[in-house]
Amino acid sequence: MKISINGLHKAFESRTRLGIMSVLAVNDKLDFNSLKDYFNITDGKLASQLKVLEKEGFIGVKKSFIGRKPNTKYFMTKAGKKAFNDHLKTLEKLIKSQKQT
Image (tube, rainbow, N blue to C red; front, side):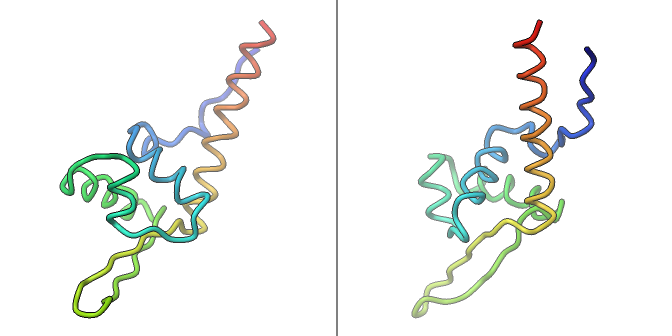
């Protein structure tokens, strides 16, 4: 049986981007430092991975101030939810197809 992998999105090939989407799928919003704590990566690496997802339209950004300190929160967009769910469904189909062989 042949399975189409058209539902897999290139943006989720990175472990970090896949992880970001996973934690945003179960959290309404997370700030930069919370995401950094989840993945234990540098500011620069996290920022570049977030930028890729933002350019794709998969995450949104809300900037505010807490007192005098800037606070940046990230959330998954509707397009991001659809793309991520499609990605997961395709992976699930691939896994199920391997169980049957």
